[in-house]
Image (cartoon, rainbow, N blue to C red; front, top):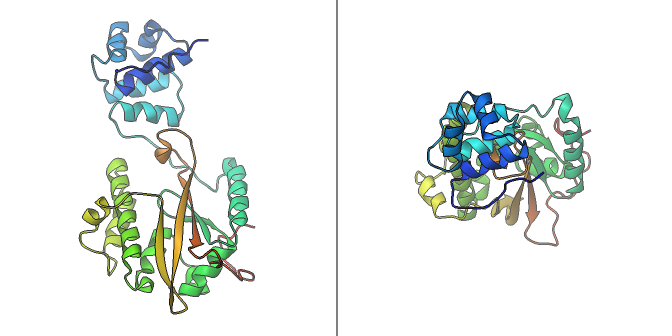
Length: 280
């Protein structure tokens, strides 16, 4: 089977439409029949002479039996918002993924590591994460924390207002703001409003974040037992592959803290701590 994956100057949507039609070996005439359109209109779409409507993109995705990830590629290429369905990390279908994440977090000990979803809700932690943050806010209080972003912003006082930490918070706000604009998620809009009201967060956080490289990893400084210590906060995305992995459920991120000093272990002496989200 020959698949049309050629690169040309046409629009991204046109190239994707030709590609998926060739993958499924569907002619323009057959696809026109399935979508209630015409072969002439499909030809104009594939040659970038016209732009598709949202209804047409959705009809093509259904007609070609495309999965959510690939349907979202088509939607975004046509200029529309991706349509993601929330995945339940606790569902029976994702038991294998929970096992894989538990093994990953254990392997990252003695470095504090947390697994979060696209809303920043905490799904799983390792023992070093519990030990590290228990030193900062107390084990009992930590057991009540459910959102990673809330935790990071609550620690702003513990950073003595360091520029590096404030910059990190500005970048988080920028990421959430753009996510809200792309997804129109009301719950995330409420969280954004709440986080922006955190004491010490600058009013010009958006302008400040716009001047920073939006990297998934950055340096932070925290007061540990009264002394400033620096860490590298490293985030890794877990989920679907491809250009729209950021909207493919489940949207998971693993965040790990590495001490800047190689001689130190942030989560040392992690034995004996308890937390409801420690893997069994």
